[in-house]
Length: 169
Image 1 (cartoon, helix red, strand yellow):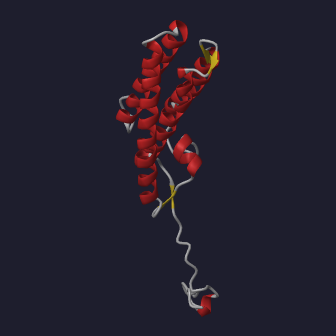
Image 2: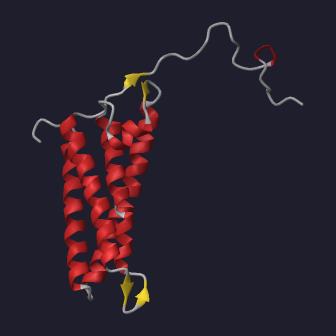
Image 3: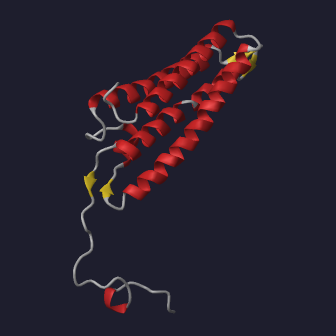
């Protein structure tokens, strides 16, 4: 990982994923306070962080989209040569771990004291972290094709000559 761009993003993803996995598994096995509350708090924290980095990555990608042709799948799943294979494998692997662990732990303990629902269901929100960090990595370090100039010569931007309405009724 020494030669990779965005090592901080990759490490944060690995660290937070490990924290989530450990807390969710311990809470699923022990299934008692305080572990249920700790796991729920970590899951909600990962979700909140995921929303923040998702929006940050999206905003950054929108700025880049003025000069780069950015596809959503490339940005959030690091495909189509957006990222080196090693980075895409690590980041998408961590996202897959988040999905599998969240579904597994929520399924194992789907009820609490005979009543439907479990604090482990909050884990289902955690993959937002992986998507957000993928998007952040892609927005800052991803490779995208340059945007082509889509303006057609001789066509006016607006007005009667273009056939577009300009708001005059």
